[in-house]
Length: 259
Image (cartoon, rainbow, N blue to C red):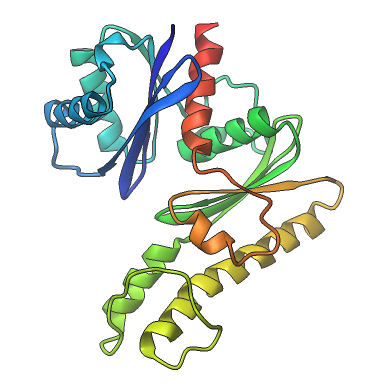
């Protein structure tokens, strides 16, 4: 058996999981807290995994992607202190077989690299990837593994929080499926604008990318991220919702390295 521990550190949340022979056996979700130490993170990770019946002392490999440098260092310290297995930290220079439209891919976020790699390996076709987190990222990767580029825009939740902070008469609401396109209450109006607005934005981006890169045919559009199901129910151009795309990509990177 091979046990792979993976982490994706974002600006708001840390998502992780343990794979046992290719199956995702447990998942974890933590806040990206810059004040926590490596020891504190280990206690949290260990506790969550134990509660799901997984012993993290048996890991064969760890793979990390991160867009928060201070937490990258924190987790690397945790790996060195508490684990005996090797670990991989993914970045733009990782030798994954991807090619790029720039000479120096070092500035490309690790999450984008992992999503591109995951879509390339899992779907084996041309892919547009929409990842909805703190930011919403939209990228294009070809079936040959060429990373064409990315658009980065404020995430749905980020935009909503900013709206609530700036508009005194608009109160915070629980995100849920809108009931109508034009609301007759403040809540209905906000849900329509926030959820439908992001869905329509994604559809237009996908349409424009396909028109701009018209030479790339048969593009599959994949959505991922915690709120992808809520938003993409209202899109016309999203083909697949794959909530484990990033974790699966980290696992595939580990397998490639082990083999």
